[in-house]
Image (cartoon, rainbow, N blue to C red; front, side, top):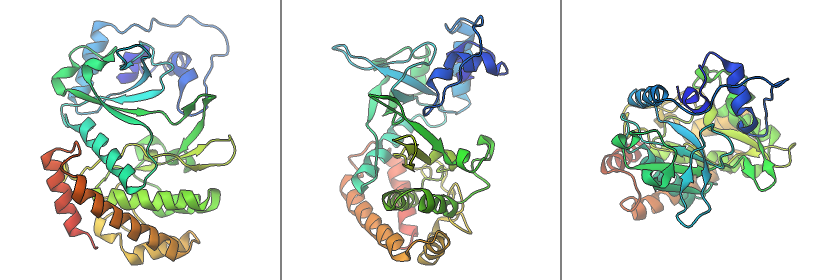
Length: 320
């Protein structure tokens, strides 16, 4: 429905949709029409706006590409056709109206722990032009993250791990584990990417982020050839909403948070042909950084009180 709102075409008409947005896909991939064709108008109708709002009412968080305004007032603008944005905007939903605040807090805390985080912002909705009418009934803020697949030179190619493992988006919680991701990084990237992955995975365990599926990990190709682990995105605490949540993928044999143990990590390191000491030292350092930052900053971050309590409860259950 979001694609229908942005492009002004029915979802089943995939080729007209690609013709409209194919020059601004994630990474450096482009989808161009073979020959000129008559394309539908990009202006959303009132019926499309209503459909988009019903989509939000179903609890799914709307996500838009946006352009940074250069004028005195600043802010962001969502283009009618979804083209050319250098920021991604996430709006509140009826199911989790504090979603933008949760993600902004989690990403800020991740940076404190030493994780590679792009530029981010938390904006009042009225600072964003081009939003669907009425979206403010679900919350007052939007979360913004600068696209790391764009720079001054143009598009930078990225590849999420669902693509790496040839897994359809619907199966992003299946068919691979964190151990498999680690093995790819060990073969295709460098030690810095391996350390960043372990640090990020440890952090997600500590805050109870059960949504780090295959599409929330990506490779980036800064020179077009050699990959490294892309910067962090989509970090948030899910245990504040789903207390019984487990990890999105198996670590090696289990998704249970309490299976993230020395034994499991040693097996992961061995299967990836990595030194266990590198993995364990990174885990210990990340835990120490997290505990220090969390104790000092948890009341100053934009997590709701309920999410703070949920993270405290979750952290107490984990092995030190």
